[in-house]
Each structure stands twice: as C-alpha cells, then as structure tokens.
Amino acid sequence: MLRQVAEGVLVHQSEFMQTNAVVVQGENGALLVDAGVLEDELSCLADDLRMLSQPVVAAFSTHPHWDHLLWHARLGEPPRYATDRCAATVRQKLPDAAARSRVTAMMPPDIVGKVPLDLLGEVTGLPAGTTQIPWDGPTVRIVEHRAHADGHAALLIDDARVLIAGDMLSDILIPMLDLSSADPIADYLDALDLLDSAAGTAEVVIPGHGSVGDAAQLAVRIAQDRAYLEALRTGNTPDDPRLKPTAYGRHFLPAVHDRQRQHLAQRSEKPDR
Image (cartoon, rainbow, N blue to C red; front, side, top):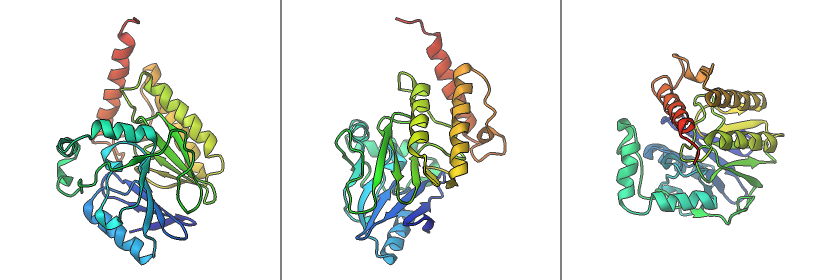
C-alpha cells in the first residue's frame, strides 16, 4: 500500500528487507524509483497507481543491485533510467539469459519464485554528467557517487524537500561497502559528505531499506554512518545500534560487518607495489 511521506511523494515498502519503492507524482503521471521486489507487491503498486490516475511515465534505478533493477509488465513501458555507470555495470553483470540464474542464487530461499525477473535490468543510462531526471514533473536532481556500488545515485526533490538515498542512510542496515573499490571507505565518506551538502534543506529522507526519517533523523543517520566507517577504518569495534543482538539485521549484519572488517584488514597487510 502506498503511503504519502511528503507533498506528491509516496512510498510502497516491500516485505523483503523493508525495501522502499518511491512514487513522485507529476501532472501527467508518476516517476517510479526502485520499483520493488515481490511480484504480488509490484502488481499491488500498479493497482494503486491506476486508482490515483498516475501511470508510470518514467522510472529510475538508484544502483546496479538486483533488488533495485526489477520491473513488472503491469507498470507499463516507460523509460527506465539509471546513471551511465550504473547502466554500464548492468550490461557487464547481466549480459545474458544465465544472469537470471545467478540472481536467483543470490536470493533468500523464501522469495525464490516470487520475484519477477523477465524485465530485470532493462535500464537506459543517462549521459554522464546528467544532473536531473528527464521527465515532465517536479525537478528531481541526481546526486551521483561511488559508495555501495559503482554508479549509485541519490535523488533530491527540491520542492518536496525529499532525499531519496538509495542504499544509504538506513536505520536498519550498516554501510555496506563496494569491496571491489580501491578505497571503499573513502568512497563512502565522500558520498556522505556529498549527501550532507546536497540535502541541506531536506525534511524527509527515504532509504532504500528501512524507515522513512525526518530532518533530525537524516542528521543522525549521517553521523552514525560516519562513526561506523571510522571505527571500521581504525580497526575498532563499532558501537552501532544496528549491530545489537536485538536489531533488525541481527541474523545477517554481523557477518556483513565481519566480511568488511576482514577484507580491509587483509588489504592493509598487502605490501605496496
């Protein structure tokens, strides 16, 4: 079910990882950001948009991870945009029919068969340096960075004062690094600085996974992510509520943290060439 979080901005949250699909309303239709995950939820979203007389006229994927590249035929055939680097990564990672099998292998077993893969990753890269979504609706600025995944972008809706953060600024997930990067912590800290600067007037933050927050929570999340990354960089144990035994991600986030810590430790032990 769609829930309004700001004027002209609605969110549909999936049962899978509290994944947020975002609808930005325009005069002639909607912009849909990160459409969602489960087939029945995508179908429900299509019904909700039809009731609002808001056909999808444009879409955007914030980054090239499978749960942000999904689509359903009932949502129509609008242009599905991404950054140029995001689209290039998709072409590299999902070039053939075997990609569906690889993506299925990444899924938790309980959702296999419930995710529509027919239109996976059919995104069009916007020209490098594009700063706004090309659509007939409110101005939506693109804030591209390298944190979490190459070609990741946040979106800023100036009039509604909403920051769509992609897979960052979550209240339930720690920062998840792109471990293929030459300096994943620096990339993430740079992205946090960029978002902090760009979102100076934002009153609402929508993470890719987790709860929608207000301006105060936005500031808290940026500070919390910085503190986690600094602890990770210095080899200290993060005092992060998202890693507590009672937290949402208690069954998988400690393993994510350990993998990131071990990867960075091994990298620091390698001699410079």
